Length: 534
Image 1 (cartoon, rainbow, N blue to C red):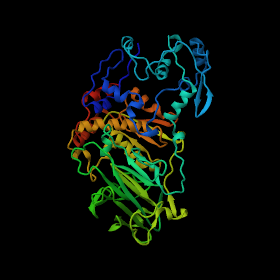
Image 2: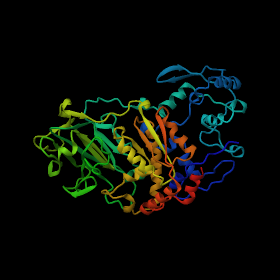
Image 3: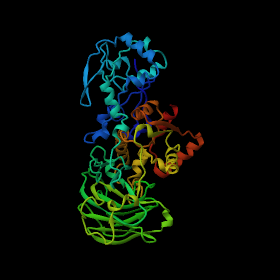
């Protein structure tokens, strides 16, 4: 019979709140229905509805990938199962009639992600061909000697897979790069930017992925400035409906300001990043101070940058009322780097006016809309990859507390030009800070439930990332081959690398003790031992 591969024990713990009881039989592990729902379900069930192309990610493997480099074996297999007969099916692809080949034979479709014993298979519906499992078994012995049923995918089906699993080149947005707009590349995956105008955005949030409602979602503009007196406006259009956020004092809030291109997207929480929030506070490098009036949905906030004086001056308006000088920036602090418009939102839909519309409020005298600045006087932000072959994805592998996240932070700091998008529960939680303070210290609800929600949200971001041409780091344990294979499948065509962190036992114990002291015990010893044994 065929067998189920074990899953990442840490992820199972985070999702369920309790470790899933495992029964080892011939290398097979039993899982609960809930675990399968989130770890092994088809993509359309995980991604949810209404998320557009970003969430339409296929997971079927293409036969060509399986037999890559083994044409003789493919030819023999086709002859054995009679796949060369009846190749007359016509399909329509890209609105044009294209002849496709189809193969008739004794082909039984096998379920993609579930390897079951013979007894278990009798009670289950067969669906989804698993070329992946056949590839794994082929290495141990030729599949020609086994009674396999083969279902060949048509070119149309292969095209669907290619356009949903690794379509970075297909999904690379084509925009007029001379316009000042919201930057599709320099933005959080969880922020849905209007693809038609690039001048409005809505943060992701729904009842299923509750953790999105606690997160900040950031974006920079496509151009920055090194001289002149520049401004832009932001209109807080509407509150995004969110579930009841227990103990959340400000469920709908925004932060507007300026930052350098190599800064992170969480405005006001690192050096050279300056923001003005809806609570009336201004912040930079996690230092918050009382500054101006509060603002909310329906208000228009203006952000102003004066680079013609030394030091440079940042100031803001609310509905045309000047709030005063927020920060003075010595040019020696930033060198010759440009300062970019930056917006950070939490459950508020917004739109921005760089000069594409008439003023929404009274502008300060002497300032020019960002879009009116001549092209030669602007500095364009970092340009991302244009196709999947230019993208890179790193998969971290290691036990909990072994130092993966520390390595990721250091590596991202040393390679800012790569603009890595980190995908992990730690990164999601880090975007939930309350005025710079960690969420765990300021959370009234059950922490394990929030972690479960973070894991669901992470799954969605993982599937979305396959469609966005960027550089990624997957920061999870990823110790099981099945988890590695499942997560990396969608990144076909990317430059893929694994980074394995393997400290000594003594070092791991010290790191674990430090983590438990600072954050509490999140992963039980039994889960760590299970991963370590693997």
